[in-house]
Length: 522
Image 1 (tube, rainbow, N blue to C red):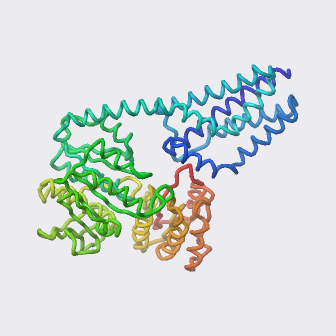
Image 2: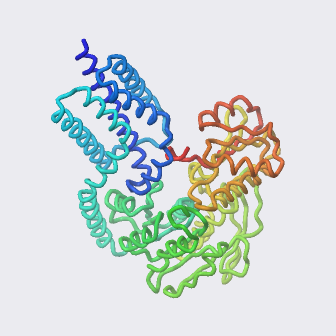
Image 3: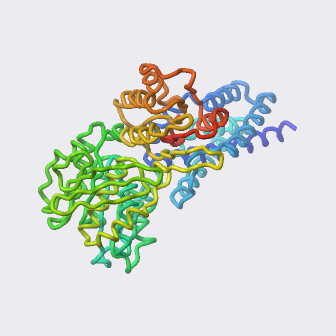
């Protein structure tokens, strides 16, 4: 009987280890398979009650080796853990790509080898159980070691894919390649530009948030065809050199910088590093290329561009630049506005899109369309038919008479300000915001979230703060601006926030979802 219990204990604790490794793999994937970022996430997870519980079980099983009650306790805990991991919901699910599958298999092999070696040395099943518990505690270490071991293989595979993508691009010599980067706004600009250019050209764009070198490589290998005339490449960066690496692959002839702000300061450290990295796109352009630059951002306006003859600056606020917008009128149908060109006639346009920063992104697409000689009526038609990008200031009505403003993706201070202005413009019902605040802003994180709290007071009647990551800064901003504390709810999770929301909603209310942090943030 005791032997059966030990075997059950060993099997169930190992199955739980497999589920823990799957969770660690999910976190590794969300941290772009970079050990440094993954370790940083793990430090924030050290106080996780589950890790502490496993550690206690390990101590008990080591001190009281073979104790029947401890073994039964391990069986019960492992069974609960397996069920818990199977039922747990994540915002961003693990995608078992080939790389993820290789990494998971390597981690399982390392775990089996470790357990096998311990059993071979000591010939003791109880020690094997303790070893599985120890591996559960340090499951993150297994992923790090596996990632290091797989690194040469991954580099070799990536190099192969890189060369294939490069060869495909070289075969499409007449392809016009447009690069888009910025601290924020690049994905929306990419979609708007795609819609406008599609009036005349056969266009391909990097899908979703495929804005890394590997994402671009995958797009080229799987989607680029000989009939494509334009390839729009979104270029993201977590560190210096990331955009340069993409440019060395695709060689863009047109570059757009939508914004430069204090985004990703945790990795870039300074705004000057952000500026230098974003301008890697413009620095890569040929002399006869085109640079389209948003003059509203000081770190764009002040940066000299000498390698490109064609430089076009656009603005939402300064009418001394090449292109600017004014005469903005919002309505239930969207927005009407006028585009002014320094060397051309003004044009009146309309769009279903709302928000001044979105209009600025449309203007960038408008400029490129003009440069590529698309007819004015075609541009006007395309702009009027642009659909908002999912989770980026989408506005929709529910059957129950509730207005939803969905700005959940990748919030930033400027975008949040715009979304709150839209929320503040509603006059019927309660104006409600659900937000966890901003992330990856380095030592400015507290300040920006504090300011967000103050902005909420001016534009919302009810605030639901999600999680603990930015709770102190947000609540301080709310309290310092005399927000009604009875209309503030501190939610432990997004599900908690939604459940609370259901209890306060009534017909005519407006709900703004501002940012939705990934699972790596609490």
